[in-house]
Length: 289
Image (cartoon, rainbow, N blue to C red; front, side):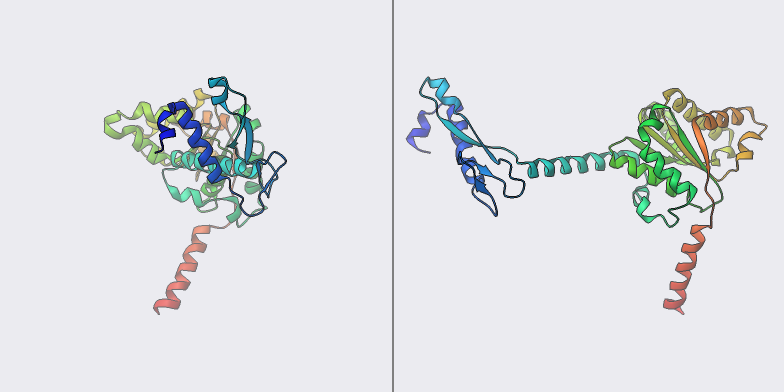
């Protein structure tokens, strides 16, 4: 530390240190160049990396005004900072959205039937999300096991997460288990999450029919989401007839609300799980026999 530094006020020292640091950071790199004011310019986007401003110490000491150069972000750096901030927000939303991180791998790029009705509806749902949200329109993917109902649900989730839309995707048994955890003490927190997210996705709807307790909890979930007036996507192995033709009044009420909230989309095709199993069997035969 010099004697001159000792006579400076804390404010003056901050300004002085900033000027020194600025000179160190803003040395010419790559295609960078100086403009007419001797301020550093980005060689890529040709916007300032430095600007010239009045030295605040001059006004404080009432001495003739002079200018100092300070660091600023060029457009390249601003865009980079925006991308980093976006990626951080998306990652945070994904941690909130998925209890099973396998869902993150399900994106439209991996769709093996991109021209199917279910695929086109799913992609259009993402494109028209603001309208879907405004009108509280969800989807109900139904069909045989392994045809891609969970896949398309997760594709929609991931595409909307990239738009920084809050999503919560879970399967019904897991959600019911969360409601019952710690003797129901977590119930309010779980239902608040169910109501708060912009899009709720419920996978494996229909399994809850096994017990009266599960049915009661599922009704609580559906009623909570219904009152929130926000879109819901569900996937189920049940046929549409099984929704309407049921003697249980509670069951009828639940699925009446589901069909009101969510547009039915049949997902047809081969069982992809059998195709995966066949590939594994081929590897086993090649490697082990």
